[in-house]
Image 1 (cartoon, each protein chain N blue to C red):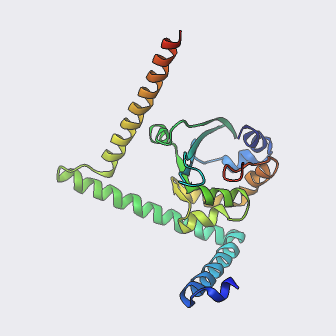
Image 2: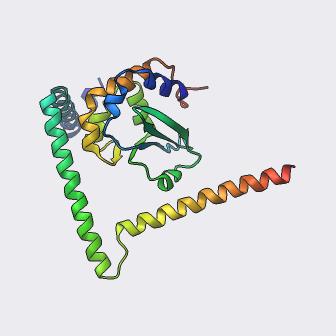
Image 3: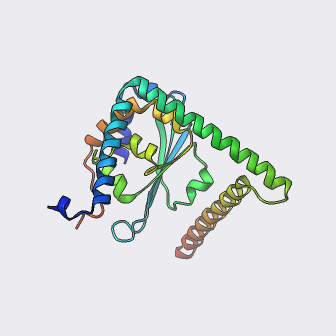
Length: 97
Length: 133
């Protein structure tokens, strides 16, 4: 019933997703396939890291903050947020005494 | 959570599965406005071939401060499907439905060990917040 209500593009997409999932499962179940996927993922991640390094160098040379700088700021803010939370708890505890 | 960690740690091949992986991991359940509005995050650290330490994080942003080797992030409904065994976590990571920060290559290479977690999850009853009355 629900199949009939779907449009042709949705049905094609759904069928394609099902086939891709089956293919991915078959590849992952085979140790050689798993190794090939792992190597491809590793190469892609290495490429992304290289690209980010180059981007960072270019941005720093232009006097602009890089992704690493933003990450460091986010980390500092998270630390500050946690310290405020801890202090609030401490103050609440003191008040209750 | 404690029961799942204990079940995982009882598995005799766990040390093989964890060998060579990063020291710690955070899993983030993204907020779902209707089903799971608070969201959740958990962090765990491995040492000596077992999960040595874990804790539920009070705030998702604590993940930023901890800076774990891996951050695995997905919406609530997707986590639910993974926990129910209806979605393969490795395939979901490769397709980008589950976002993984860290060495995904190392995790894919250990995909054959995912039964350790599956078995541990099966041994523990899981209540989902959107099903609890």
